Each structure stands twice: as structure tokens, then as C-alpha cells.
Image 1 (cartoon, rainbow, N blue to C red):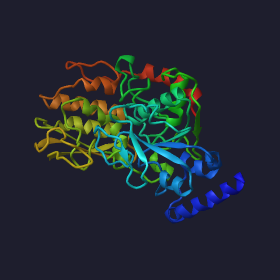
Image 2 (cartoon, rainbow, N blue to C red):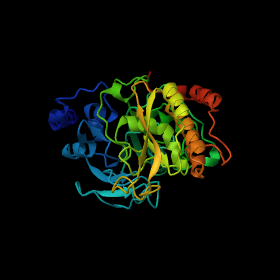
Image 3 (cartoon, rainbow, N blue to C red):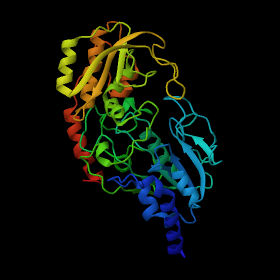
Length: 402
């Protein structure tokens, strides 16, 4: 009977996805795809909660839609930052509600609570976690994963991580390692800024290294990808880019974000309120140092143009950005195909603005992003190599891919 149901489910799944896959043959098969292809029978008789966002897709079909059409018993949805359907701006508080497309309850994990409660998890015996991460320690999806694992451990619920690629690749590791005093929603794993791990690997490391607050050993399974290797950046995977947040519309934005996100910890504009956040940077009193920009261009393999711009409120993308409706002077970054070392670049470009926009300053948030203590008299310093080397040795036993 189980085999018959699985075959029927797979036939339905192939029918659902045949049109969307006709023109697209990715090299990498994600954990979500392999859940359907190889583990579907294990969902029979289970009461399931989904911790997902718009990136939880197989080709062009959201995994929720696939599971519902395959008659899998979905009880509730859990929403990270930006919402289950991705309709909220960065940092916007999300309330519980009802998913209009499916009619299922949606519980917010980016509002009054960041961790699922017992009431939210009532009647659920399996959680499926599927989100596309960007490979940055300060990206909040990895914190949501941690808190969901902690709740699953507390309430004796099984959790499966449906793994996806680290878009930056698995070899690039860079940046300061988080100090415990700066643990927060934007820093809940004691890794460098760019950790070079998938969320599945990061979950195993968080458990193995004792970073999580666990009542019992969690019942966790990572559904591994097929075809992904550590040297791959996103374009090598053949997968379509689904924006993990409204302000990272392309892989190039996400790649540069690993470094230019430091600008958020200053009074300088990181480009929210423009069509190209994290590639567009500026301040009212910025005066470009062309000689230094040329050095950065050569060193990091980027093109940099100077420009002026006015940040605007953009519904669903940027709500009252820094310097709203104020004319700013700044730069626009064009990453080349061989753009290298985004974290190091971000440090240098942040220092460039602090030097060339005299009224600019650090905010306390910079310590949460870097994971270290800085003050207004400091420049950000590339001073992490020993920490990175130690981390890379420690992470080896948790790596799932070569």
C-alpha cells in the first residue's frame, strides 16, 4: 500500500512540475526536490508544520502547493522575517494570520515571539524547514532555524531541514567570529560573517558545538542536496534565483551584501529605498576619493561609478529608509563575474565612506553585525585570520558536501 501511494504521489508531482521544468534543468537537486522524489512515503500519516518562505520552491512551484496537491496533511505555517509569502519589508514586525491562498493558519516567528510556542505546535509531529539562505551570519533565517530546532527539542517534535546551496559557495570563509556578548537575532551562531556552510550543516554544528539551548537531543534529519559541491557559487547550480528578501533581488545583490551590510551599522545609506540596495551607497556630505575607489576596483574586481540619488519609501521593500527624500552623493557597485572577497570589500568600502563623509559615524548596531566591539574612533579592521582558521578546523566534522 505504501509503495502504491508513493508512486501515485510521484506521478502527481511530476505532472505538477512538468511544464515548469521543461525549459530548465538545474545541476543541483535541492532537499525539497529530494523530499518529494525519495522521502514522500515517510510523510504518510504525519501531521506537519511548514517553516518556509517564497524560496521554498521546486522550479516555479512552492513546496506548500505541491504538498497540498499530494494530499499531505499540513496543519500550520510558520513565517520568518519578510513573511511566508515574502510580502513584508526588512525588519517589519509580522503578526499571526491566515494564508489567503491555502486558508491555513500562519504563525509569526518575527513578531512577539521568535520561537514557536507549545500552542502554535499543537497537533504537529513533524516540522519541515525550507528557506534559501545567503551565507551570512547576520541573515536572520539561520536564527529562525535555531529557534525552531530548540522548540522542536522542547516539545519532542521531529524536524527535517531541506537543504539548499550556500549561494556564496562552501569554500569562502571570512570575517570576525561572533563574540558571545553580541548574540542576537542577527548573530545566533558563533561563526565568521561568511561561514561557507549550508543551513543543514550549520544546524548540525549548532547542535554539536552546544550553541543551542536544548532540552533533549533533537530529532533532526537533513535532507541533503545532490549535485552541489563546495566550489559552486549560485550561477554554477543552474537553479533560478528566488529573492530571499525584497532587497536582494539578484544573486549579485546577495553576494555584495555580505560586505556592504556593514553600512547598516553606520549613518550612511546602504541603498534601501532604491532599486539596488547594497549596491548603492551614499551620504549627504560624501565627497568621492577617486584614487581610492580605483584601488578598490582593481583589488576586488569590481566596477564602481559615482552617482547621486534620493531614497524613497517602497511598499513591501523599504519603509522610511535612511535619508528618505534627501539627495545623497555616493557610489554604485557593479560586481564582475570574478568579484572576490565581499566581506573584505565591505570593510574597506565602509571605512572609505567614514573617511570621505565627515559627519558619518558608527551606530551600536555595527557591533551586532561584526560580532565585535567597535567605537567611533575605530576603523573596521581585517583582523580575523586566526579565528577563521580555527573555525574551519572545527567545522570539518559537520560538513555534508565535498
